[in-house]
Length: 139
Image (cartoon, one colour):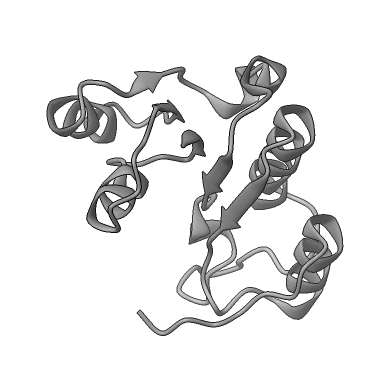
């Protein structure tokens, strides 16, 4: 499986695929947190890191199978005072990079993850842009 991961963090997507026994042919990641990238490189030296999602040319990943991502939830979480409740702001801009990556890469499958407390208007927009109803998984 060829995997493109945005907001990759410490590459838990790679770990999940390994634990599920799914062979990964290549895994390309976009992440800007230097500490997360350091952990990822230590645990998974085979991952190719590309940096900032805003700088990505996702057409280079045509033919990839899976797009993973969960843009930072801090902008939409009820834990943040004055959180974003509509489709404006940084959280929205980050989510739109996931949409752009999905459109440009034409990955066959995707998994987009975020928090349950997102405002209804944002949930509706995510549903519209991704074309599927979200499901709540209590992890």
